[in-house]
Length: 168
View 1 (cartoon, rainbow, N blue to C red):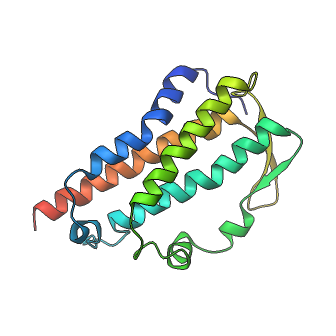
View 2 (cartoon, rainbow, N blue to C red):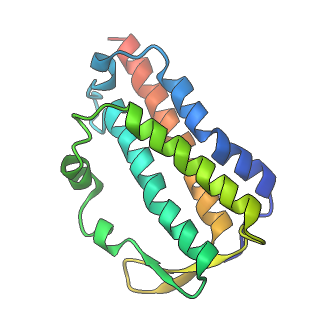
View 3 (cartoon, rainbow, N blue to C red):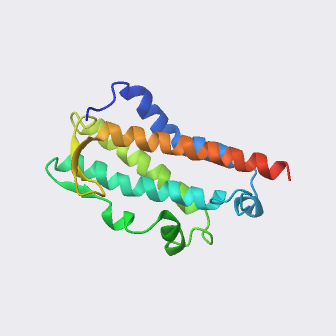
């Protein structure tokens, strides 16, 4: 697997992720954060915690790649349970969103700073063991793009939920 070529564009989207998320949340009350979508799925509050926790997990992958490309990263412990179970374990429905947003910002700033100082960090890679036990070499750039896109994906979902709220 090769790192994406449009590094500057992807890094900018990665860097802007917390602001994109915060802009999607402007003006929401706690009641709206906890609105249960009609067709099921997570509340906005749960989505926010999911984004921050996912970013935190993948930050470890990036740091492993930047420090020891021969090391292995796995999420088998996480994939052992459905994401809804982790949401319950980590009490997504009860927690304030401010700490998770701060974590997302800090993690993103931390990774961006590391990439400024680690030579060829974008292309460094990690040995990733998938749920089938197969090893795939995954470059940092791929993880950065995945996490940048993850925020955008969920912000679209938040927008859809907001639209549903305003029509009820």
